[in-house]
View 1: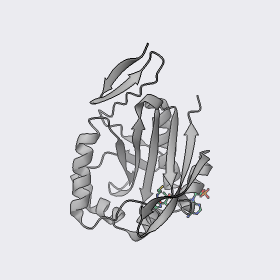
View 2: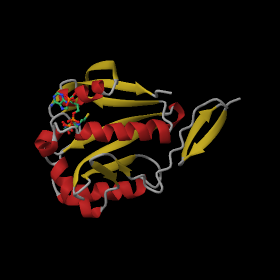
View 3: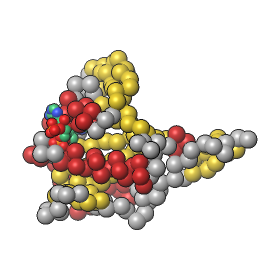
View 4: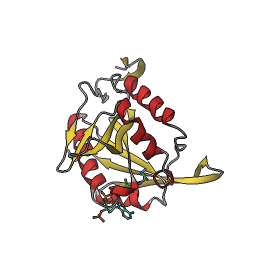
Length: 202
Ligand SMILES: CC(C)(COP(=O)(O)OP(=O)(O)OC[C@H]1O[C@@H](n2cnc3c(N)ncnc32)[C@H](O)[C@@H]1OP(=O)(O)O)[C@@H](O)C(=O)NCCC(=O)NCCS
């Protein structure tokens, strides 16, 4: 029998067997790896976040508009202050163990609760590229997504020219599942998108 389920003010039509992701990001899950601490970002991080999200190299393949001022970073932290306690999405600031400074971010967002599915997103300041940092962060987030959140699948939607990103995903056994031709307009051009996905190992 179908019945309506409510979660965070959204209604879902479900039957007894329908998956229903119920993440809980409180208390905020601080994750540690060999070299990194993945922690919640606060207003103390807005200058680093602005530096990251205004950098042309970081934004090159992203749909997001580059940040214009520190106020954009401040507005984003305000958004997380509501979204994280409401379990809408989660984003970690990536820091090195011996420095508290945010050098990148990694998130689980676009939660599709009735499908136990979500999307991963990540970005790192260029000074730290090619040192295995995102590999380390992604390994921790995949473990959190599959084992703590109990996701069934994790997707990543990327620009097909973003070699760093697709190589990172393929290294982590994500499979390319779709290539959409010119399905979005950004920066004066129609562009392609590619969907990668990874199923829970269980
Ligand atoms: C994509 C990105 C996160 C990679 O981070 P990183 O810390 O440099 O990646 P790592 O050093 O952990 O590399 C892990 C694997 O990813 C792949 N990789 C990363 N950067 C690569 C590059 N420039 N070219 C080819 N492969 C790359 C490799 O397979 C690498 O494994 P290897 O070192 O054994 O060859 C980083 O380049 C970045 O922040 N880019 C800008 C933001 C962005 O595009 N985000 C993705 C949005 S979908």
